[in-house]
Length: 158
Image (cartoon, rainbow, N blue to C red; front, side, top):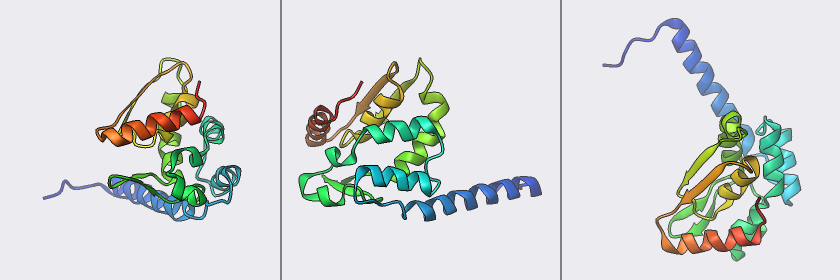
C-alpha cells in the first residue's frame, strides 16, 4: 500500500496541490494580442513571480518560434503545434518552470540542458536569464533541430 502520511504532511500536500491548480486556472487567462500584452497579463495574473523571469520573457517574442501559419495565435496562452506531433508549451508553463528554477538560473555558473528543445523558444529565454551560463538544448527530431536553429537566428540572444 501507500505509506501513511501524518496530518501535517497531508495538509502540505493538499496546499501544494491547491496552489498549483489555482495557478493553472489563472494562467489560461493570460493571452494577449501582442507579446508585450501576453507578458503583462502573466504578471497581472500572478503567473510571473520573479523579475529575472519577466525580464527574460520580455526579450523573447514567442512569435519568432511558431510556424508561420500560427503567427496570429503566437500570443495566446496555450500550447501550439510545431509539427511532428510536438508543441511549443503554453507561455504560463514556461513561466512557471522558470520561476521555480529562477534562483539557480540567475547564478553565474548556471548550467542548463533543455531536453526536447523543439522550437528553441525556451533556449532563447534561458540565454537571457543566464547570459554567463552554460545553456544547451537537445532535440531528436532532425526537422525540429533545423526549425529551432532557424528560429534562434531570428531572435538575438546573448
